[in-house]
Length: 296
Ligand code: SF4
Image (tube, rainbow, N blue to C red; front, side):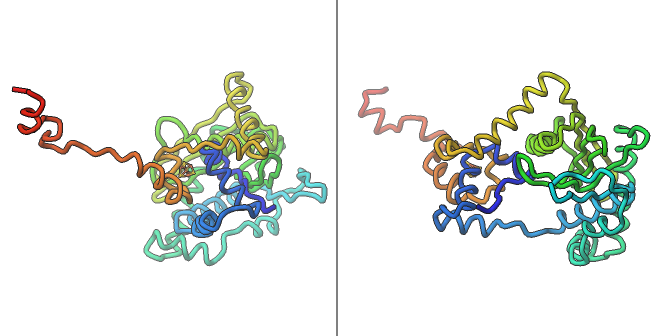
């Protein structure tokens, strides 16, 4: 079976188990053609924003002197790996990604790199201020994990105490972090055991702002909430997923869902409200109707 769960999409899967069930069906080769077509049409293709994020991530990780660890043959992290230029280059953005990213900045790759460096400088200052590391501890970049689901963690401290996910964004977050971002970071925590978790949002266009949120899984209430991630993971892997999958219609879930046309649109179209209109004529009995009903 093709792997279908990823840390980056885990939040969406938790948000709508019906979506998760359709994706799993497709990955297992049991899906109907329209589901296969929907998945194919939505297959990830990088866009300028995603490509610019990739460039900025690498510039920051390299600039902070992160180690880019490899897993050994047992799948364990080799914590002894110091900063290795070779490993770093494996994660470097491609020329094509830089070209695509430059679409945001008048197709000027020099300007694009300049912005990426400004984003990285801003992010580095915030990380060093919020999560200073103990002597001898260093940041690892793109740590590969594959416990409850596969993914790469932007920043993990080598003592596995801290995890940070960087979000380059065009708009600041609201008052609380996005749920799917929190859930994504929780999959990283489940895979590594890290307790101090953070998301750093940075202005991808001008590096004018950065916003930070961190939390500690030693807090009992948060630990309780974190355990939802483990329960959701069990459900996603079990046969019960197909039995209990529930369509969770909401703009947040459905707007970017690949199954929107064959799921939400088909169902919710049947619940269209026929509005009275602005004149109010439908809510007032007509004279013919009044006479028929004996209304004066
Ligand atoms: S369209 Fe909405 S309800 Fe349907 S699978 Fe997608 S997210 Fe779930």
